[in-house]
Image 1 (tube, each protein chain N blue to C red):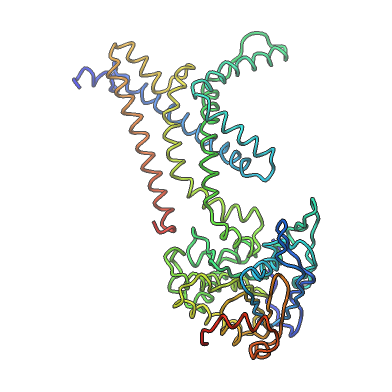
Image 2 (spheres, rainbow over the protein chains, first blue to last red):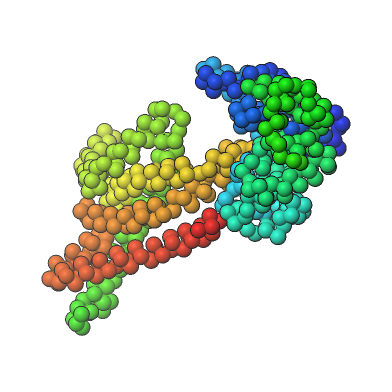
Amino acid sequence: MEPFPQETAPLPGATVIKAVGLTKRYGVLDVLQGIDLEAHEGEVISILGASGSGKSTFLRCLNLLEVPSGGALNILGEDIRFRLKRGEQHIADARQVNRLRSQVGMVFQNFCLWSHRTVLQNVMEGPIHVQGRNRYEVRDEAEKTLARVGMLNRAEYYPSQLSGGQQQRVAIARAIVMRPRVLLFDEPTSALDPELVGEVLKVMRDLASEGRTMLIVTHEMAFARDVSSRIVFLEKGTVRAQGSPQDLFKGGMDESFDRFISHFSRPG
Amino acid sequence: MNTQSLALVGFGPDGWGKLLLLAAGLTLAAAVCSFALGSLLGTVGAALKLAPNHALRWIGTFYTTLFRGIPEILVVYLFYFGGSLALTHLMHLAGFPGFFSLPSFVIGVVAIALVSGAYQTEAFRSAYCRLERGQIEAGKACGMSSTVLLRRIIAPQTLRFALPALGNIWQSVLKETALLSIIGLVELLRQSTIASGATRQPLLFYGVAALVYLIMGQTTALGIRAVEKRFSRCWGR
């Protein structure tokens, strides 16, 4: 078991994720056509784009749930090692990837809580069975984390007994209890009923205000504008525009982006 | 049932009770061993059938097709006669003349395990296919190695989903042990045949045997249902 890395004080500006010319191809379909992105400690980056622009695929490449077809990927200062097999890239070192994944939290669109485990067990699973931490210490921290997302009173419930918003808050607790250095959110509110979106966004706002490093794929424009330090706009598998939310949202910076946000007339 | 019949199936000096009970014990032992070995085979079979490698999948399919397609009684015969022939041949090669055979308990258990393993393969495979891919991804995303993922997420959920099918397979394994009577194992059916021959009371003894099979089957079914109920709390059903 790898020793669990202590939570280090955020080095302002240190690069946590660096993708260079990242590509992903499914058969003849080029989903990502060379994406460059550098994320620094403390940044909150919202990745926007129409469906099919490759934003989820890109996010999933960052913790190797999708293996990029080409390009270079550096996570927390380590170059991910790939090997070629029959012309396709594969993960070369599973232990390296597992080690890095335990420091990169992921929150899914469909929550993906483990249905055979209670809320508390879901949150304790990773620290105990991946990081090898002490059960009692973890229990304590898991309860504190659940309290932070307002789910401690549901600790003994099973996921199927919770609403979508509650499940997603548990999923966020499950990610942050691992003390990750980066958090990835893959459309965290897209599967929620509209009245449940707010409670999840509130938790995410709190995390952002703590100075956590976050990469968020979302369709919540108001949230992206208010919370992000940077917006990355993808189109057809490439970075079409990026910049601060102030610059991008005032319009006139990129025609395509302006057209994209004009579809979201929801006041925010 | 009159007092004479009661004495015949009872535990008195003229009673067959003790022998029947022993035979029922042997039936249960054969069923448990066959089912357990079958679970092992089923796990391997399911892993083969789900393997990315084409050749491995083919072996898995060959196994399930073969043992689900041949009548159980034929499998028992094949193993009984084939097993003895092979063993005798091997012993001759090693310089031991004469005829050798494996204990019928072992042969019977292996034969029934192979058949039940083929069915368990399908139970495990279809249960695995019901797992939500997202939950497996969630395990990977927090850094689980494939062994931890298998042990903590995949195995418990697969087992839960396979449980109803496994219950059915257990019931049929219990009944299939009756086939071992044809290769000379004195299990419940064989003992009843012996008793009914000796007393000329076939209806009585076969009736008792039927009752004992039912009791064993239903008791274990209750147990399985209780486990199922406990596990399904988390699925909210």
